[in-house]
Structure formats: C-alpha cells, structure tokens
Length: 298
Length: 229
Image (cartoon, rainbow over all chains, first blue to last red; front, side, top):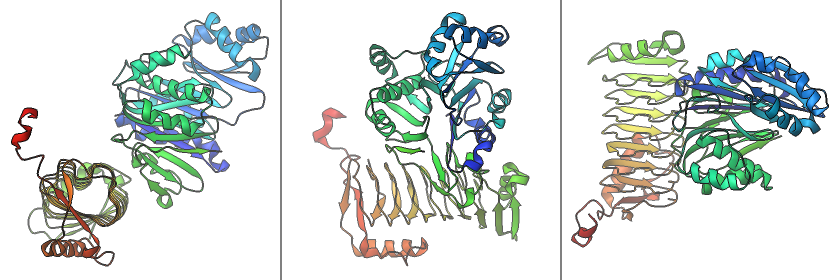
C-alpha cells in the first residue's frame, strides 16, 4: 500500500504551521504503511546558504564535532543542528559539494538524506507518529513538504529504504506502488553517471527524474518521461525547490486525491488525510487523472 | 431521525447499530455526521432504512447493501456500493475507482464523475452516472445496465458479457469485443426508467444515448480459434 501526503502552500501565513499540518496528515495515513516514515520539508532558502541533512546510526559519536570538522575541511563556516539520528548542517552555498565530498572521509558511516538550499529530509523505521515526534516535525515551518509512510514490498525495511528519496539538489520523490523494470533502468542510469545507495525501486524513479532534470528537462517533461520509461504501478509525488508535482501511471490503481483552495494545494493517498486542513469543506477536491502530470511552482 | 456522530462514537458502533436493524423498524431514518473520509461506512445493511452521510466517505461505503437507501452528501472513495445486492445508493459528488464493482442488484447513482473501473464485473446492478466515467469501466460486466450522461474513458466494456451500456457523450475507446448496437424501443424504455430513478430525467433524454454491448465473439466458443484456446 504505502501512504503519501503533500502540501504546497500558497498563503505565507500558513508557513509556520506546515510541519504541524503535514504531521497530522501523515499520522492519519499510518495504516497504509506502518514500516517506516519520512518527510521532506522545504524552508525558505537563505541567500548564500545551503543545507546538508545527514543521518547516522551512531549520532552521538558521529555528530559531536562534525560541524567544526566540516568547517575546517571546506574552509568555511558550518553550523549544525542535531535532531535525533539526523543532523542539519548549514554550509556556504558554494561549499555544498565540497562538504558533501569531505563528509565521505570524515564520517564514512553517515548517510546524506538531502542537500540543497531549502530541503531537509528526515526518515526512519517506525510509525509515523514516532518518527515525526523524534524529529519534531510539527514545529517546522516551510513553504511545501511531502510525507510518506511505507509498507515495504521491493526492498528491506531500513532507514535508507524509507521515502522520500533525494537524488539531486533540492529534489525528492515519494512513491506508492512498485516498479518492475527498475533493475534495467538503474543499469542505464549508472552508465550515465548516477549513483545509488540502495536496491530500492523508488530510488531509481527519483534518479530517473533527477537525470532528466540534469539533462535540461523541465519538471513537467521529466515527470512525463516516467510514463514511457518506467514500467509498473506508481503514484509519484515529486518535490523541488520551487514546487511539487504529481503523476500516476496509466492504470492508476494506486489511489490519489487532491484538494486546492486559495491557501494551498494538498495531496493525499486518501481524502481522510486532508479532513483537518483549513477550509477543506469548500476546497476543490478531485482525483488526478491517470497518465497526467500535475505540478505547481512558485 | 437517528443522528450518529461517527467521529465521537466510532465506526464499529455505527455498523453494529445499523446491522441490528432487521425487517420492520421504527428507526427508518439515519443521519451520519463527521464521516471525515472514514472507510466502510454503512456496509452490509439489510433493512429498508434511509441513511444519509453528511460528508465524504473513504473505501467501500455502502458495500454489500441490501434494501437500504444510502445517500452520501459528498464524494465517495474507492469501491462504493461494491457487491450491492439491492436497495439504492446515491452519491452527490464524485466516486473513486471501481464504484459498484461486482454489484448484483439495486441502483447506484453518482451525480458527479466516476473514475476508473466503474461497474467492473457488474452482475445485475444498475448504475447511473451523471458525469463521466474513467478507463476500463464495465470490464467483464455480466448483466445489469450502466447509464453515463457524460463521456467514457478508454477500453469501455472490455471482455463484456451481457450488461447493457448507454453512453450519451464520447467514448475514448471500446474494449475487446465491445461494440455499438442499435437502440430499439425496449432500450429507450429501460433508459427512460433508469434516468427517472437515477434523478437524471431533467438532464438528458433517452434518445440522446448510444448503446454498447457485447459482440459475443470472445465468450462464445469459435471453432476457428480452436488452436488458441
């Protein structure tokens, strides 16, 4: 099954409540996937700064002096905030790639969850309510965000197998469904220079879109290409720095509901996920059409 | 009128109360408030009662319905009125996937649009959709009538048996073995009755519809195809 939620805010007044609203939506979807949960939150980018979210199984040891160590390695100011097993490192924008590279030698066991100007990804094994509480997601503000609760089918129940998957700067993707040609697509993408952390099918979809964007495709075009090149069942929700998009495979057996008001665009695997959003009773609610790309950008 | 607050009292209590209604009862009118998209609302009813749901529902609302009239004053999630036996289910908004699937009797009215696989494997139910229906609708439909005032998506009536399909708008494509058939007086009569009962007689006239049915080549033995069986 799996459950997906997404929220794109049009009204800046709601931004301080983004984390709270997304948490409520995600917890409602718990029975669609109790294995693991994850959330991607996009904050307003700060000029000249970028964020690197890393995860470690040994946060005490790995995170203790990480900000200082990274700062020295990239010769720039690095600050960090630890949240449970994750740490968000703020680095100068022009040092982001260097920091990511340095991390590999400084903390080989630490995993990069996301990198970019606005994105932070938190994901762990466990129930949505527990995962959201560990990372205090409800206290986070932001412009848009995506959440996922997983019922694993294709690969192991691990932190790295949880969604969202991020395979490009400020990009992420969550998935309900399963892909049948992910091994062959992964091979092609590896030859094209993309790297993979897992054997997971969804990571391939994320990398497929990132690769298209690298090649110069627009978000809508990259999502359109999933309809011809990826085989299997999918409802994808994709996040970028400026917006989010939705696409369902032509058979469209994985559920999806959307709602739009003057204040927001919301996505839910089920309508249930959206019932507590402000003004939902007056919202335009619809089911996204099969094989049709929807996206909103600011 | 019995009013039931689903959020406060819970789904199990609701369905237990509704299942306890058998035969003749004084509690013939029910109102369910705060449905909030919950699953399995008013499933398995078997009494001549009238149930109104004030809001949108999740999966399988009014599934396996017998005798009862269930009205949803909102939209319905996947599998509404699945395997209905008799009675009436009326959705004011849209219905998600496989509305009325495998239904054996009764009437399902959807005043908005229905999405994919509407009436899949229907076995005697009548379905009236005021809007459009999605792809693969009436797949392997065996008997009953489907009336669509709007358009039909891809592969309408694929592998159809003996259900009658009436579509007023366009059909994106017909499924295997589904063909357009002539409208005879008896079909006009069936349609007129269904439009009336489906609260759609003010919206469309029977003469505006086309009829689709089975070419009967797929489900009957054909000696020329012996090698492929």
